[in-house]
Length: 515
Image 1 (tube, rainbow, N blue to C red):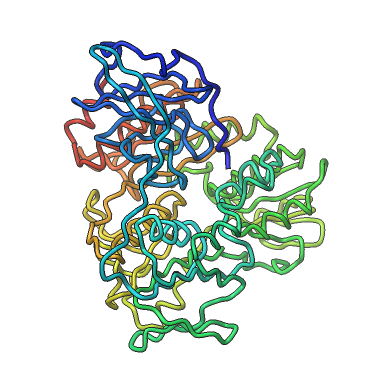
Image 2 (image 1 turned 135 degrees about the horizontal axis):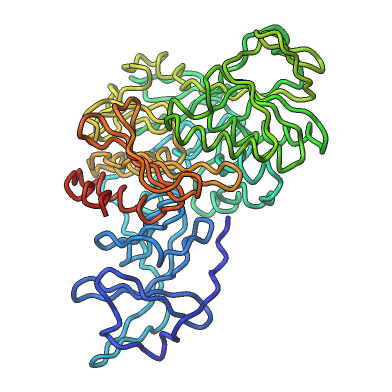
């Protein structure tokens, strides 16, 4: 998945560079036998690691060094400089580490290091079951093995496919610019090698909390000492006459994306219902396939509820310039074989209708098990539910967010993966509070928006830069408190804002935003 090495340039690090060239916390990029490698100085220590992110090959040297980690500017993956381990999603694979040799005032890079095996955990759970083979579930399974868990591990998924890159389903894959081999997160051989049992095409039907078992739809019963609930969310379907017609679709799964692709062809006409991120990403992808696209939504402009009117208007204009027709302030009244009728009375031609009107967390299992529910599965700071030994992560989990001081539930892929990683460590007894700041990115045609923080409501939006030139940052505030920072064309600022929000460093964040 985009793991090709970046084109190597800069000095040959095997021949050495002057120590004075290494500035504290600022990567120096060079090459080692044709591979892009960077040196990072942290106090008296110097690290040499691959300069290429293992998630879509982002340039790590353009990212941010935080403590003994480096973060990618594209999608905020985080790696340990000492071990190369992927500490925070979306990266799943480690980066390479190299031997560093110092001779006087010269620093050179030696051989690539072999990562030491992770020590096995003392007194681990005998069996762990993960329900949900999406981002959170897969990240949890991989983290458990990386953390040295050697017990029985089962990953249960409703779909027949191995875990895959869900965000791509509405982006490059749907647009036809991402090959099929990019979509699986891992091949089946990976799960065999890691001794992760896959129970795919197999829905979990019932949890016995006292007996510590899970009943599957195929009749099997799985025992567990720790259980992770990560079933994700289900798309909301249209509730209008004609909504059950075969050309009316939602987009949540790989099968959904493939089905939509099968219904597209240049000159076909599609109606996208809902100006959500998924809906608008679908609109952009279909235009790339030369499909005529009309968007119907009740709001006056797309994204206004999440991003505000200014950025919403910019993105509406971007879509309109690419040929997307908007019918805003309107809703669907009826769907027929070849048309969609709106409540305003307008009729739109439609060979394909895609509903992007939101999702609902899949709470049925948790409700049936008697777990505490509050617009999601209630979890504590360690992502453990009201039933000891049962954890929850991803779209279903409502957790006490230390940054807002409120319980929140967030439907972001990267956050779901990070929750899966945190839950895995806590199932092994780490007892580390989940403190990640929500982050997501969205690509709308040729504009990428990065969002860090969480702002359900705000008092004002401070804008710096020029939105029309795609170079701006927006700060969402409640009173004087910064809730979220959105950037367009300012990847470095997004990373730095995320780090400041993580530290709850209000003064540092304000200084950053004034710079």
